[in-house]
Image (cartoon, rainbow, N blue to C red):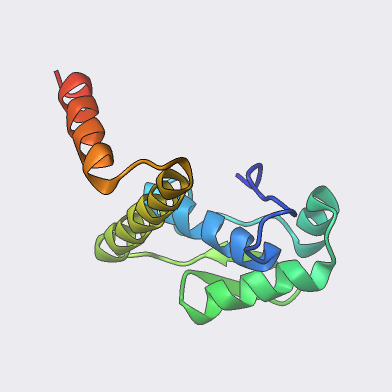
Length: 126
């Protein structure tokens, strides 16, 4: 789940961790009661300071997505279908922003992207 954390990204690592959990919750990869990796385990795997993982988990807890239990771990809370839908929509918006930024770097216009997206949707929904 955390294989796309990029230490070279301008996005702070804690924010990348939190975003990955949000995506997993929105996609249904993580369900209520599922445990997240321990702070030490994830910090070791990502080769980051444990405080970075704690910061991500605390942000998610403040949003109501996870519950941190002292000595037991961090667990996904019971997320409503509406909340899952909001997380998926937010993830879609992030993908679109990333796509638009990459397209701009390559000189591709929004109209070009829209045509390409429409064409691809027609092909994949047949």
